[in-house]
Length: 272
Image (cartoon, rainbow, N blue to C red; front, side, top):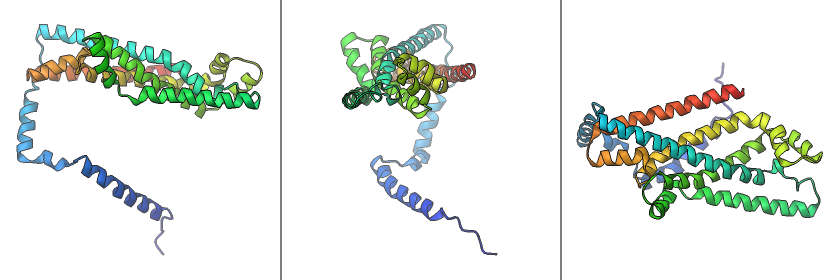
């Protein structure tokens, strides 16, 4: 019996070869040399560095600072995501074709509607193009050290991310009910709530909670540039070479991420 030949084997093999040809120069430019991690000198350095992380610090004064920094990080991420959501919702409604009333009207309205959606999508591109840490550096110089700079930085960048993905989620589902409501004279809000949200609510909530989780991580990173929270406390601990404090901060951060994941799962079950 002759061996069976996979008809797609040649295509997959070609794709693998092309991917390797494209990826190799990128790895060279990025100076990706993971084998250097296993040199004797590198292993000694990593072992000495990691040994300083144990045991985690449990000093009362440090735990008080850790609790305050954790609350600052949560407040920064939550406030920044909330402001981003307030900006993203109207931008998503204006940029999605599923809620476009001009598509139902005359040709002149269709052209103006397309131009308006293109302009809104350009705004979304600009908002998400600049990383939040760059905005944080700017606002720290304007507002001074503290979480307020991080809140504004998250609000600007994440509004572009949320608005883009919200529009894509709304357009990827079944839009016939929303179009029927618009053709019957309904407004955009009613078409959104009764035509699109029943099928897209779970995905929208899941992505919003995921973005909040990303905001928690981003808040930690922005702390290194003076935006407060766990990142600023981590920066101080690392500069003081206090590995016990750093390991406790990392453990706290891990707990925050696990709580965000549990919250996302709970909300999805409620909406189901």
